[in-house]
Length: 328
Image (tube, rainbow, N blue to C red; front, side):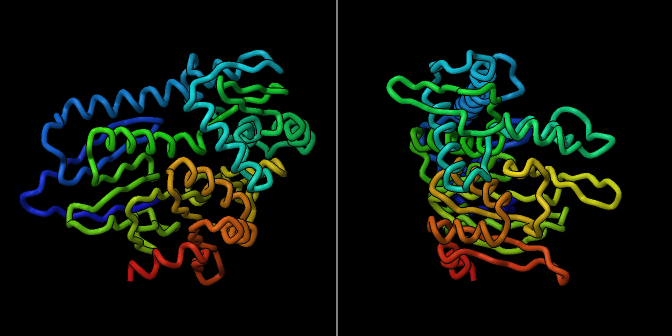
């Protein structure tokens, strides 16, 4: 989760827009808004764009494009929109780069552990049930083709894009704003964000990485980010306990079980918010060591907070170091 710092410069037309989408809220700050843009018309455009994203990728809308795909025939290429093909293709890329840590078909395992629409179970799942589902889930069952855009499911897997769709929604709104001539903005949906240009003070956007043990949005580390996207993933808010053992909502799709490592949160800075969103989830599953190894290999800007006996320890990749230097 990111905390946003901003203040206003007198005489400059700045707007704050907000609303609801994807089961959460969005907040948009526009700085030095170009003449000729109508505020209400722009708000309607943004809401319409986010409604379109939901209609393409939501698992809560029964007739969304994604849900129709999930109910489609097995082994046949299903025609899909370019945005859905793009995001599934990006998901498969992150799946491969992370050796299966990012998995858009993990839904049945999430539900089994009680982190889906059903309430948490009275008892933790049996090994046999976990093993049975592990044989079903897997992005290896998915393939995307282009011109025309199609997606094929070789097994009856169900795709859930909740770990990347918010980021994609941020990107869609950001690109919409740029088409309207907006050159200074911050777009945030549920804590995932993308920036361009300068903040209301005329400086680079300043983002605070939230401390995992804080419900009051205490900032662990401020960074300056312009022209980039930021996403954070962590297990510190959604979990339950059974017999003194804490079970995280983040399921490792490689084992079918909740994460047990000591990585509290991971923040990724990337060109697109969809990529930052998906990578943050993948790195959170991998844990601190594997995650940083991947970050160094792929030159990813990554900041981690790792739980220790003495509190939280900060770790970051080489590509993230310049953001820390600029914020000092």
